[in-house]
Length: 95
Image (cartoon, rainbow, N blue to C red):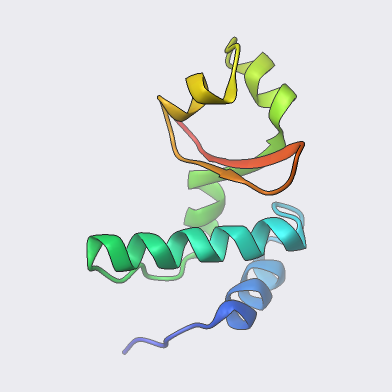
């Protein structure tokens, strides 16, 4: 049995289980990314807040570049999915 989630359900589900992993803006962008991924790959993603938190992280771009010894967001994008939340914050798929 599956339940179709809208953006609100996704955000509430994530905040209920892992309230400190993503900002509200980040959750909106992550929801958009995951639904686009479902559509482009023609498969359904099962909602699992813990797995999503293991797969994706939100941080300041400069912190991520420093942590991975990278010079640019383009270099990061060569290695993983990057979701731009705003001018300074990104969500990236952990690798």
